[in-house]
Length: 457
Image 1 (tube, helix red, strand yellow):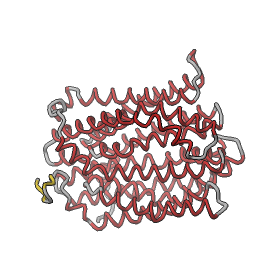
Image 2 (cartoon, helix red, strand yellow):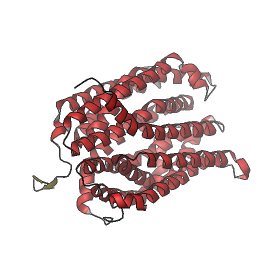
Image 3 (cartoon, helix red, strand yellow):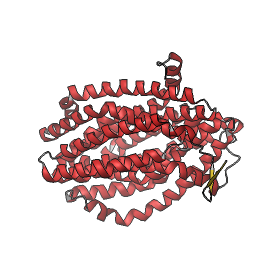
Image 4 (cartoon, helix red, strand yellow):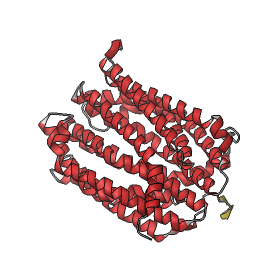
C-alpha cells in the first residue's frame, strides 16, 4: 500500500461527507428527541432506549440485507451495467413489504418480552406502548435501507441526505408537538415520540421513492424497467446480505438488548445513564458508519472495474480518516464525561454511572474505527460471511460470558457489561483487520449463481 494520497482522500470525502452529514442530521435529531423526552421524566428516559433498540433489532437482519443493494449497485456501475443495480433495489423493496407485514405478528408478545427484562412495572408499560407504535415503521426502515443503498452505490449520496434532513425535521417538530403538547397539539408523552418517528419514516420513504422513480434516474439507470419480483435476484441479495444482517443484529443485541437487559436490573438511574451515554456515542460511530458506507460504494465500483489495487488503497485511506475522527471523540469522552452527562440529567447517580460508561467508550474508539472501516470494505467486496462468523464467535466466546460474569460476580453494576463490550470491540477490530489483510475478498463474485454446488456467472 502506498501512503495516503490527496486524490484518494478527496474521493472518499466527496462520497462520504454527504453520508456523514446525513448521519449527523440523524444524530442531532436523536439528541433533540432525547432531550424532549427527558423533560417528562426519568421513567420515560429509561423506557425509550430498550423499546427503540428492540424495534430496531427487528429490522437489523432484513435491513442488513437491503443495505447490500449498495454492493450490487456499485459493482454493477463498475461493470458498465447500471440498470442491474436498480433491479436489485426493487427486490429490496419487496423484502421490506414482507417484513413490514410480518412485524405485526409480534404485537401480542410485547408485554411478555419486556416483562422478562426485570424492569420496573411503570417502565415496562411504557416500553410496550412505544414498541407497538414503532412496529408501524419496521417495513419502512427496511425500504429506506434498499433505496439508500441504491443511491450510495451509484455515488449519488445527496439524495439520501435530502431525504434524511426532511425526515429529521419532521421528526423533531412532531416530537415537540406530540410529546409536550405544543402549538395546540395533544400532549401524548412517550407515545408522541413514537408516532413522530413513524411519520418521519413515511416522509423519508416518499422522498427517496420519488427520486428513484424520477425521469432523471430512470433515464440513466432504468429504474422503472425491471421492477418485477425476481426470486433469483432476491436470493442473491439475501445470500450476500444475510451475514451483514446477522452482524448488525448481533451488534444491536450486544450493545442494546443484552446491555439493557443487564443494566436495567440495577435500577432506572443506571439504565438512564446507559441510554444517555449511547446518545453521545452516536456522535462518534454514526459518522464512522457513514465513512464505511462510502467505502462500500468505492470498493464495489473498483472491484467492478477490476482495479483491486486502488480499492485496497482507498480502504486504508478511509481507515486513516476514521481513526483520526473517532480517536478525537474518544479524547472528549475521556476529558469531560461528567459535564456531558449533566447536560441531560442532574441526578448524581446517573452522572456517576454515565461518566464511567463514557470512559469505556473512550478506550475502544480506535478499534471501533477499524470495525466500521473494514466492515464497509468487506461488504463492498461481498465478503460478508466472514464478518458474520467473527461477530458470532466473539459474542459467544467473549461478550456474553464476560457480561454475565461481571453482573453475577462483581460489584461493577452497569459498568460491568460495558467493560465486556469494550473487550469485544477491541478484538473485533483486530480480527476484521486480519480478515481484510488475508485478501480472500479479492476472489468473490457476488453475481455468481449457486446451482448444485457449482458456481455459474
